[in-house]
Every structure is written in C-alpha cells, then in structure tokens.
Length: 315
Image 1 (cartoon, rainbow, N blue to C red):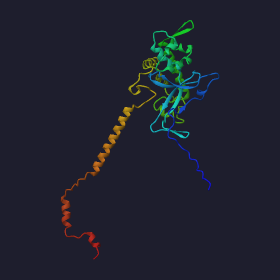
Image 2 (image 1 turned 60 degrees about the horizontal axis):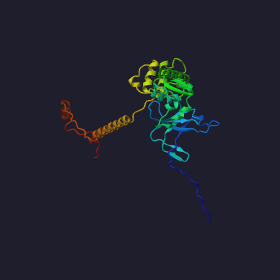
Image 3 (image 1 turned 45 degrees about the horizontal axis):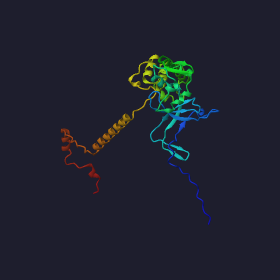
Image 4 (image 1 turned 90 degrees about the vertical axis):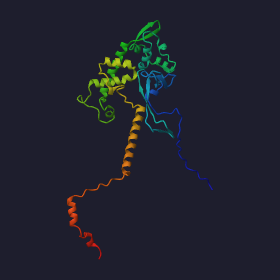
C-alpha cells in the first residue's frame, strides 16, 4: 500500500533573534556610494540634550546622520515572515544636523582652542569619531571660533554664533511648518492626523509666534537647557507657563504617576462597588404610615361589609 504523504503545515515560531527589529528608513539611507568600502551602521552616541545613550544611523560614507526614534505601546508584537517578534516597537529614522551632536563637546571645552579630533574623544561612546567625517570646516564656523595653525585647525565654542545659528534654524523650521500647513496651536497633534483639517487661508492660520514657538520646541530637544533659555530669549518668545513646562512638543506621562493614578481609579471603583453591594444586602426599613382621622372613619363605615372579591367565589 503506497505511503500517504501528509500535507505540509506552516509552522509559526514564537521566537526570533534578539537583534531583530522593525526599522523604517529613508530609501537612500542604505545606498552605498561607488568606491565606498564602508556600510550603513547603527551606533550609540551621546544625546546632545540629555548626554544619555541614544541610537543613531550613519550612511555608508558617514556623510548622513539620522536619529533612531522608538515608538512603543503595551501588548504589541510583530509577525515577521514565519516568526513572532515579541518586541512590538517601531523604530523610525529622522535626519539630524551633525552640528547638534558636536555642540555639547565644544561647550564642554569652552574657553580654549582644541583640534576637532581631540574635542570628539569620548571613551564611553567611541563611535563619536564618525562625526569627523560628517562635519566640514565651514559648518563649524557657525558655532565656534576657528584658528588655523599650519595645516591644523583649532576650534573654540562661540555662544553668540551658536545662538545666531540656532535662530536661523528656528526660522527655517518655522517656514517649513507654514509651507506644509502644519497645525501648531491647541489640538495640533489630533488635527495633523485628520484628513482635510489643515488650514487653507490666512484667516485660519496660527499666529507667527505659535509657529516660532513650535519650531523652538523642536530644536530645544537637541540643545542643553541653558542654551535653550538663551535661544528663547533671543527669539523674543513668551516665558514658559506651568502648563508648558518642559518640552512644548512632547507630553510624556511619568510611569510612577501613571501607575498611581491607575491604582487610585481602581481603588475608587472597588470602594464604589463594595458600597453598592452593601446597600443591596442591607434590609430596607418598613415605614409605618400614621393613620389619620379620615382613615379611621372610613374603617368604621366599612365594618361588617363583604369584600368585593367574595361575590366572584364559587357557591
């Protein structure tokens, strides 16, 4: 009797290698220029605002830098080919001016001239040396004083130049926001994701200050707090209110506060439920109605009479 061959079944594996992630990149980010020996790579660098570890993507020739942003929600996963990736994060790359990454190192050595390769020495983040290929001599003049000695160039942080450069950046971002018709006022996050919700005329367009404040918020994510305060003053922007404290673009809920709020809601729900249950089990008091003189007179008049139901009984 011939052997019956079982039909193949697709097997979905529940694990993948730990280095698997979902990353959305620009199309030309993976392009390797002709004659280039390098390859695109994702490395760890010091974040210019927080000085903590952050992920950045470099092109094969180290000429383009992109920041890797992560978006995650609870109880999310991805199905990749025949595998289930338990990490449901989405990683998105966005181009960043490498001058922002060099700026903290210049500020750290403010007051003295140093060569760029010496400025960018970081034992904790050795890949910082990649920035040497991203920055030109002309670009560094935007944020520093330059002294050329023979074939060597030395750089010193210049705060006035840095503020002027940041102001120009703010104006450029502001112009792009206007050109794209991006909502920057109250409810901007919701409005930008609704089709047809962008303003179409000058009457509905936000004020210039709102655009400038929003662009300032974008740039402030890549500079120190002290430099951000000076930039805000140079742009003649209003002082931040308590509701606008911190970053004007990002609103993050602190984990501890979020958990405490959740626990408070759960506790109040349990307390309400217990109160309802207790009220249901509690016997109701029978309130006896006080008999009036009229009720007593009607009772005496009805004495000795038969009930109307007695007429319908079988005889």
